[in-house]
Image (cartoon, rainbow, N blue to C red):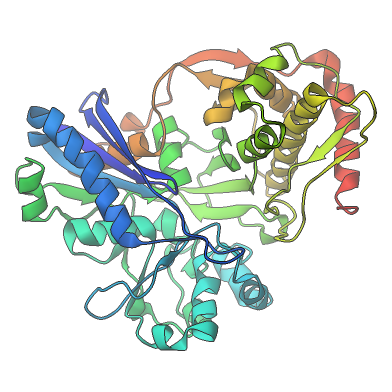
Length: 480
């Protein structure tokens, strides 16, 4: 038997096919665009998601018909927090407002001022969350708000297309601002505070549960048999954790993607909203996780690459692999605002300490260190909840830079494991969830960690210098 994982990202869709031994048989991607009609806006058309999935899965079906005929389960992963609004006939009322849309900052501030939100959801109400988006719709598009019959997260709109069911999972729903995260259920008081009702929410399942079965016409189109189940799935970071085997309490990963994430799995619910650490349900039952989030990790490097007209890979390679003493230049990577620990949409980045000797390589070094110190901020914030992280696994495009990983390991004071070459991301995690849902497997047996190719230890001789540089980094935030 085989399983299919589908990950709906912001810039594209990825479909991945695995067998029962979790060997990857095929993978295809399809691109997506983002509409930015006004400053701070970020939207996508849900029909484009469907087209992208049809493209990616259709190409797998065309090239691997025998393997597709053996599919028994489909798992879903996706970008979190997006608001997809449907009327009573399941027609889309407007383009979906995405996670990185900041138009509803004022609405988020009002909701967060109500102590009920932090106490029940376990989280600050960030502008990127779903709840303030609906309040913005109520304030600015009242005609549309009055017609909203269902609010679905992006991957759950795909589920509706795949199965005809209005369903979400716990991990993705925890990022709406409406979930009682400890009890793993919708909170009627939080919904009411936004003018919403529980009837407008999808049914909740665990990520490993069956949420529905694939529509017959799609099964026939893709060459699948009847009764293909669709698992609950997970939000993108939770699904990535499933793919990485980051499921046991104390296990953690560092994600160096467009944004940066420090993710720790927990066997109990550990909220601390004041730290700006996300406390969400994991994609496995009776499991939670914490996340520190920075908005511009490799995005900072890409910005600097565009500014200097130099490829990001060239900037990284110019540093070599041997960690240097911290630069006298300090970089704050807040070019899009910041979440953990500052919760500020308006703060912006800066270089400080520039001199005549500050060239492109020196600024690249400062940029890498600034991102590493932002991870140190997240590390400290998670530690305030009582969670201890003793080592972490590196994922994401930025993890290809040994220098960057050495800087992060030294800033955090913990070893960083680099997995062997392979695809352990959100689509793979979604396929694992499909395997559990379809076959009734024990999650711990499926969600193993990948083999470690390399362990990067902190550079002991530079720990004092990095500590001093981190204090300079922290002191700059009030100035910014």
